[in-house]
Image (cartoon, rainbow, N blue to C red; front, side, top):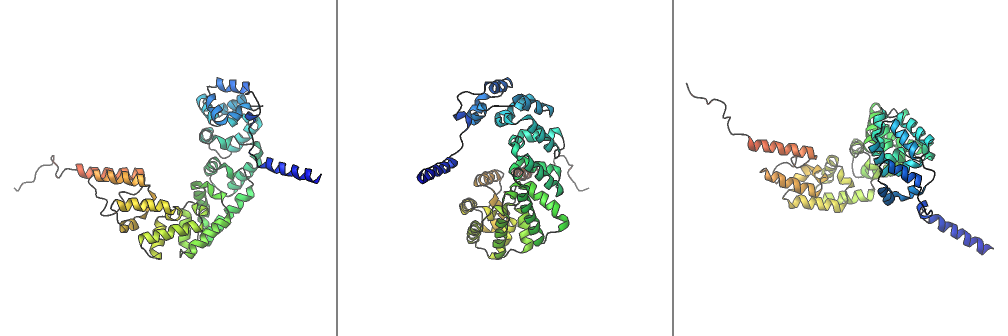
Length: 372
């Protein structure tokens, strides 16, 4: 009997480790009413069968109810078909849950059109499981009580729904850790709400990390000589990515950068403050980018003066250098500012170079000056 019990326990454990099978692997026939309803909406059934065919085997489904709710928001039929193709799980949501979701989202959305835009881009964030609604409500209330802008909360729940489907206590813990760190590093309490709002807006996934990870990273950077004000600057400029780093990887990247640039610890810290990307780019990525820049004839001194050029991929650097050369500009001399920046910045710089080339040496319309 003991042996039998042991075998049973082992079987249960094995069963728990096996991936769950979708109903499509058990049932033999699709839900024809669901397929017909989707077909009548001009939904590409073959796309659903290929990517999420298991949905078509479920029962009950709520195609009519889901479409009716979306139409009340002003969603056009072509967009409804698009949403259902990308996220067919929507038809599994009961009508009462859809109404609850609609009510919750409208408490943080400025208008129906605002919510429609979110459903179009993030359908999985709206059509969530009904078991998460209580967590969602509690988290929305928490962020509202923090004084965050409704639009920021909506963006947060749309782009990182995981933050809202877990217990509110977990978000409270991380937010409190961020606020405490901000103040300990010398942040102004009067500006803390704006700072937190900007941080969460730029990187909503910062809440998914642990306070311990953040503390370990700041302790490491402090040992590297960064002051409290500099650490606060990094926390803001890294957009919360400092919570996703690890002391080991940062140490390797910093050591490689210092060795390559042949600079002092103090110089390296100033370079990092200008280009925090040095902290989270791996050594292979940095090696590739340094090799690309140096191979183009760019000096280490130029890189140290404009380190943000290391944020550009090798493909972008090579393309921009070639284009600047076509305008007669030699990147080997002077600043790398022309090479640096966003695509829009670079195009503006190229436009200025083009104007210099086309500008005439004299104005042919202006009258010539003659001695009287």
